[in-house]
Length: 125
Image 1 (cartoon, one colour):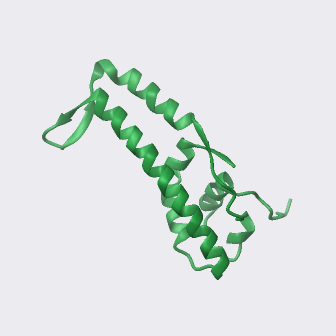
Image 2 (cartoon, one colour):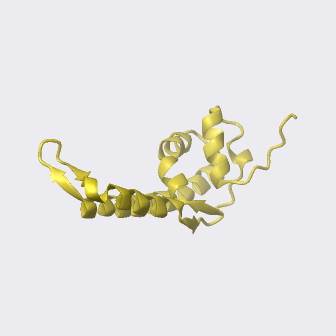
C-alpha cells in the first residue's frame, strides 16, 4: 500500500496507542512487524525534515532549537511539503481493519488505520 510521508509523520501517536493494545499472538506479531517498518520510515522522514530545517536555519541559543531564516522560509516550507507529499510503498503485513475490531478504539484511530490497512469491515448504511 502506498502511503505519503505526511501521513506516516502525522500518524505516530495514534499508531503507538493502537500498537500498545492486547491482540492475539499472530496479530501481535504482524503489528510488531508493521511497527518496525513504520518506525524506520518515520525515523528517516524526521531525519530529512530536521536536516532541511538545520540547513535553512540558525540555532537559537536561548531555546537550543533551529529557527528558519526569514529569507528561507518559503523555500523551506516547499521542501518540507515535497518531503511530506512523496509516497512510499509499505509492505502488506496481512493486517486489515478487522484485525483491530475487538479493541476499543476511537474514530480518529480508525481514520488512521484506514490510511494503512484495507477496510474489510462492513458498516451499517
